[in-house]
Each structure stands twice: as structure tokens, then as C-alpha cells.
Length: 364
Ligand code: ATP
Image (cartoon, rainbow, N blue to C red):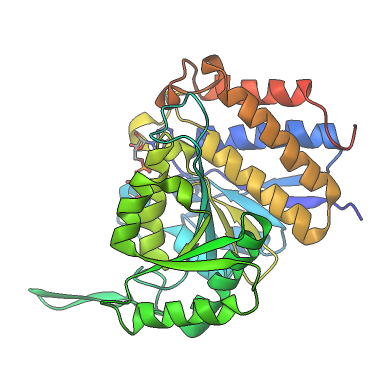
């Protein structure tokens, strides 16, 4: 049965004010073709929300989001926030609050964009709510502390439950793709932490006999990603390893503008969040690459379509995908970081034009 989606729009900071509206414009155009109903709800967040609501994560935003199907979260430039009460980094709180434990980060090469390799098509599934990240691996306080002036301790948290659920999410994705899963870790050194992560991955593997599993040590993985990225399909790993490897993978295919991401979890809420930050150096210049944000949004629409059984959402995502590929093929409708001659608006218009010229499955 076809239903309506309720989606939040959270611009974030800096280039977020350019690329999030681009993602909404593209999605609106595709939804108009397929007849998918979307109720868009803009919500305050980030530096602008600090000025208007006294907090970078206003209470009303969290409350409203909890009743939605998903939301687009633009990049957050928290490093530049003033040191005042109310100026917090919102996204770790959101990932934790909404139980968004799996961060799905695909890397794909498109011809003509200056990718180091052709034929790359892999997905890194990164555990999102524990590991080494001190702002989300404890309930209160910080997982990083300094008992004396000269000593700093960083705590890494690995749990069986956290490892098992992200492994299951990765196996599900592998099952839909080429049925190969690589577990990345360093259990040669982190015998207990990575050891537990690997044990849980193998335990979950028993539920997926159709998926072939192998293991690669993280440092070898960093090297193999450069040498033969085509040999990977789905990769599952702990939080910090996944963060670093997904930026490395983005570098293989044109840089951070080409790195989308989707956060999913226990609940039914999904969050579209590009891998890159708010890029203050290029904000306001109209040159930010909107691909990562648009593709993150497309992934969210597709995921919600499957999760909710909304055929028009799946159809919308497929229409967006064809249009994105068409726009990427023309230098005039891609940004300069990926060997284009256009800006954010040109690329957005190019994708919208391809949507309008395309044919939806529903209409076919
Ligand atoms: P964070 O730690 O918040 O992820 P970061 O330090 O990794 O941020 P980014 O803001 O992600 O830094 O960007 C690093 C650089 O990459 C930017 O300064 C910018 O030049 C480039 N960059 C990032 N995103 C884009 C984009 N969408 N389009 C074009 N260039 C980008």
C-alpha cells in the first residue's frame, strides 16, 4: 500500500544551506513524477538555531523528529560554534537518541570524474554509537579524560549487542548485493575489543549462509583500498575505523563531495547525512558539490520505500538515481571538484532536468 512520508529538513551549517535545499529540490521533482506524497518539515538546527532558539539542538526539533519517517541532516560546523551554553554538536546526540547504530557509506566510481580507480562499487557499514568516539560511547561525561596534566585516557567501548546489530545490518545489505562481506578489525592487537566484534560478526554470519565472509586487518585494508578497491563489496567495521576508511574510499572516487551516507537503527526513523563536514572554506560560493547530500537523501527514500512497503518511494529513488547518473556524465552539470564546469545550482538543475525528461516506473 502506498503511503505518505513525513521528512524533516535540517540544513545544518555552512554549505548545508546550499546542498540540503538542493537535495530537497531534486527529491520534490522526482516525487512529483511518481506521485509520492512527502510532507516536508523544516526544523531549526545548528548555528542559526543558536541565534533563534538559544540552542544548536532545540528541544522542539528532537520532539518533532521522533514522529517523522526520516530527516535530512546537513553538515554541522560545530568546531566554529561559540563557547556558550546551548552550543553543542547535535549529530552524536541524534544518532544516540534515535538508536541510529548503522552508518551506511557507499563508494562508487563514475566515469570522467577523476576517480583513481574505475569499477569501484563498495559499501562501508560503520558502527555508529560506540567504539572510540568519546561523545557517544558513555551515557554521561566523556569517554576521553585527563586525570593529570600529562596523561590522557581515551576509552573504547565495544559491546556484543552493538557489534551484533551492525553486523546484521551489513549482512542484510550484502545479501541484496554481491553477497560478500569483509569484516575489518585489528584483533591482533585489540584482542578483546576487536576480538568481540569479530566473534559477533561470525555468530551473525550463521544466519546468512548465502553470504561469503572474509576478514582483513584495518591497516592492510587501508592499503588494499588503494590497490584493489574493486575486490570489496560490503565492509563492516567499528566506528573510528569506518570513519577513516570511508573518507579514504571517497578519495578514490573524486573526494568528499562524492561520499553519501545513511544512518539507520532499531527504530523506523532514518537519517540522511553526507560523510563530509560543513566545508566553511567554500560556503556561500555556490560551488559545493551537492551529490553526497542528494544521494544520501535518495538512499533514505529508497530505504523508507522498502521498509514501509511504499512502491512510489522506491520508484522515486530509482528515478533520482538515473537522473544523478545522467547529470554526472555532463561536465556542465557537475561541480569543479569532480572535473565539472558548473556550480551547485547547475548540478541541481541538471539532475532536476534529467528527472523531468525521464520516465518513472509508475508512469511506464
Ligand atoms: P568534519 O570533521 O566535520 O567531517 P572535515 O574537517 O572532514 O569536517 P570537511 O568540512 O568535510 O572537513 O571538508 C574538508 C574539505 O573538503 C573542505 O574544506 C572542502 O574544501 C572539501 N569539501 C567537503 N565537502 C565538499 C563538498 N560537498 N563539495 C566540495 N568540496 C567539499
